[in-house]
Length: 393
Ligand SMILES: Nc1ncnc2c1ncn2[C@@H]1O[C@H](COP(=O)(O)OP(=O)(O)OP(=O)(O)O)[C@@H](O)[C@H]1O
Image (cartoon, rainbow, N blue to C red; front, top):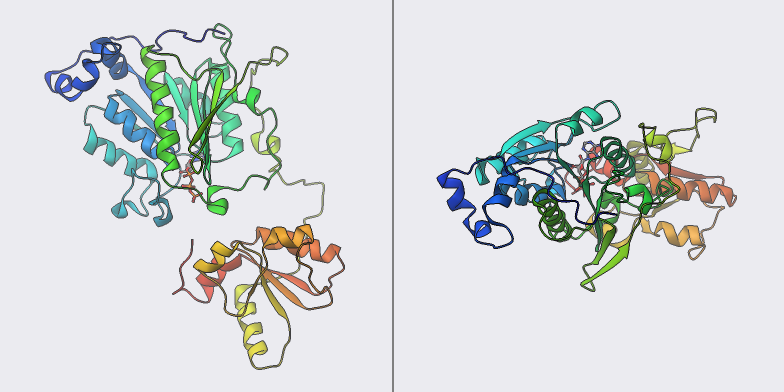
């Protein structure tokens, strides 16, 4: 593997007087100088995801003077994003993330040309979008997109920087599966996608906001080195960060010599186990709506009904918002058998959005419970339909 494959971008651009003053702290770095800054100005960098990782990454790429920044994101800014997606502000809630990010870039550095791709990156557009850029940064939050990015970058022979965060942990690396470079791809690190639901999203598992800055800034550090050719990159190495212990570990990752080169895109939803099996009958899970639950709770309060309402979320979630009269019993304790329930009772089970409670209902029915029901849409639906004055998360 060529660990220092040389600068990605030629120093063709010229800097104006204003740009020389703006970037002067870069220019006086002996390893950097005017030439590296001109390479940055001539660079076209694509960031996928203007979310947790994309936010600091885009800000630092723009501040550093990357000439053209593409942003792919099909989402809009939500108030729960502001805890970590620092490129967006209160006034941007409801706006597309790509246009909100563009506003911040223009404010920070008007020398950057911004290209918005307000689409879901998928098989139909990935090759065309990637073709317009020298380097890609993947700051997305799902496995199907990560394998798509990896394969498209390999097909086009392009390098990319990948980062991922969850709770207090982060990972970051550089992939470049171009034969003349010989670097690994994401598939060399993770040949198989985890089973659906095995790795929670940040929305399910939480994330320390500042972790985005720690991993996102390393991603930009790598991008700058790849573009300019200075230093040595994370190609062939993965950094694994833990924010609680404040440790950075390093893993080696090599190209699997027996791996067939990727020459075409495939079905990433299916690869990640996300496509429903159309051969199977759709599962009929006994369920009730939030409005039905409201009626049942009234009946129970009037003494006309006797049942248990079980909240299978985690204690931290229960502290944020709860349905009066629900008993907290986290999913994992029920599934592991640590919490035993009386399967003869009538039970209604809810979680945040309905998927953990569905697991518990299935489990209890397998254990012989005949009167156990899922509350569709979980507490999010309950707040929406029944108690809109309560907070959601
Ligand atoms: N295939 C894709 N095409 C376009 N954008 C994508 C794709 N996959 C993920 N993203 C974007 O990547 C970003 C990832 O950011 P992040 O992990 O912080 O998630 P989030 O969805 O904003 O937050 P939360 O899950 O907490 O609501 C999101 O803005 C999401 O829209």
